[in-house]
Image: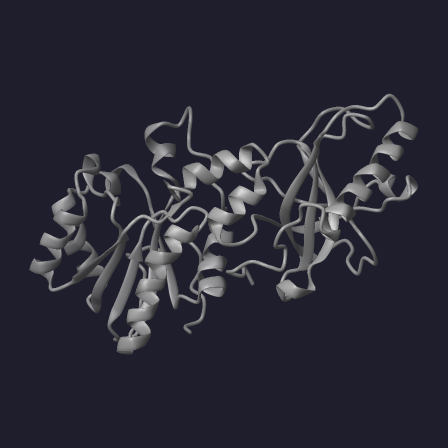
Length: 331
């Protein structure tokens, strides 16, 4: 595998070895099972033919340009997506092209020639069957195939993958995340939805109440509901099998302070080996209850004990399902 390129590397600056290039193209927000099918096709062909497998993605989402008052809330930050593609799926490189008005205005018929000019070793392109591109989204797979014939580039299109009779999509996953439905979201993703962050020093209130917590700096665009969750925690770089069960509160802590930005607080069910400065992954499994305000700290303490018991019961098998680890790993 090639060394990881800098983030936000654009087509104007990419330099790759002179090997046949198999390139998956798409926004790939969340890198769900449908996205994985496209990317794995590129990986398989590249490995079979002795080439390189890469991903071309874009930032920001086009809605930031064309609908700034109501943009799509992304499931993954760019850095997390790049790391997932490289380490989780094993692609050789990732190129992120800035989605500007100039780029959006490129006619569909000019897209592949420009791509081939930037990547002369381009051998094949891989997209989903419903992928659209070019000015006004006029380009589709059929037009891409026509361009591919002229440019000597093979075009592979992957059919949409359905779960329970409906197509897997980032839109569908965002709705589940926004509703706190993580069994459904994780089934569509092919891995556990996760928070990734560094532990920050806290006010030690949880320790005072008998439930010490790890406070993570985490500010997602597509956020789950404020509430209490059964989660699993592991250090960044640790194998999924080392994840520890925990209970987490994602909220503004209305009982103890005025409303501010939501904070993710995680209480490990058992020995906790982590502290401030540690980089963690928090994998979301089950919404236990919504966040609410309590009349005093004694009532809050009693509820936290109940939440801890509910999380433990979840991991002991009361509706837990398969929490053995993701099918695709982030690290």
